[in-house]
Image (cartoon, rainbow, N blue to C red; front, side, top):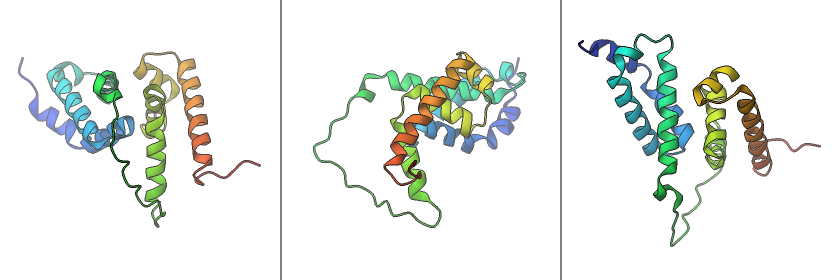
Amino acid sequence: MAKDVEGFREYTAGRLEKWRRTAYLLSGDWFLADDMVSSALTGLYRHWDRVSRMENPDAYVRTSLLRAMLNERRRPWRRERSLDVLPEQASTEAGADGVADRLAVVALLAELPARRRAVLVLRYFCDLSVEETAAELGCSTGTVKSQTSRALEALRARLQGTGLVAEEA
């Protein structure tokens, strides 16, 4: 059975940038995001005959991105950080378009554990329901709800000190 190369190209052409942004939000690193997308595309092409007949091929790609991110997190060199000199801090002056605010939120998102970050990205960036997120992560809806709640609570706590969220009275 010959591969439907043209169908694969048509399917992936308009989705690459969204997948890259999703991978970036999952990993917090553009280079790693590119690697994750590349890995997902390799698997997608390899199984294109089967995936192209699926009801929701995007779910297959999101799952591939999640697995690539989790596999990368398990690598021993990802846990090591050694610096001789601390890097200079970038300017945090908020521009008219809120770039600094977005960068601060993405940085705080990167501090979350991988599973909580994945839940937030799937729920709020990919706009999946609780049930769809649970299916993507292979867990129960209750786990998605609790991980979402804990992740949002952690983000709110960290955002309180940045001035991006109004202090509670």
